[in-house]
Length: 212
Image (cartoon, rainbow, N blue to C red; front, side):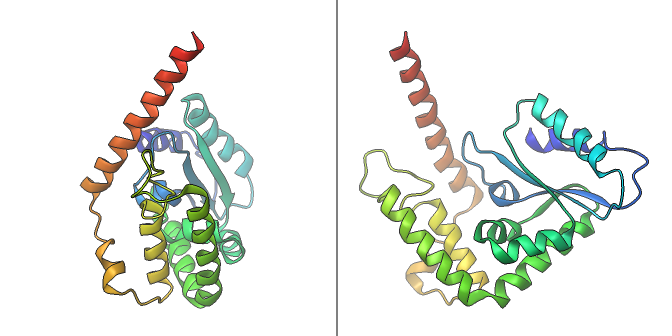
């Protein structure tokens, strides 16, 4: 499992590193909701003054060798907060940061800082989020009316549920129609992605047969 791979990699960190280190899952990995074939988005948090390159090398290479598709960054909590203040994707990813291994307080500091920043700049973020949603809908189309819908990015898909939650975190008041689509439990989400995984595997099978 990805989490166990990450924990094993953390055990290989430089034992003499002076300072705090933590590996945090962010984005879909932080939420515990990954589409088939998704990257694992992780952040290495630290307050080290030296030895960071060796720490990062010991962490990333076992993950790459295991075949994990990795989206990764190395930050102090302060630097990560600056990034989240400028970029929508970084801001939303950090809202659901989850500790995998290491110093839990670093991850709590990251997440609480992201939440404060998100509320403080709620007007700008909601505008950016609305533009992003419209662009995504124009590209991916309607989940309800397509034969093979994009269940993640399409209108009415999982990303819309996440956008509602991000809006709510920014202070947006949701109406009854919005709230009706919110209570997806873990079983429902896994059922959705089981179907998506079948579609991905089927497409790969057809591609293989067509190439032979």
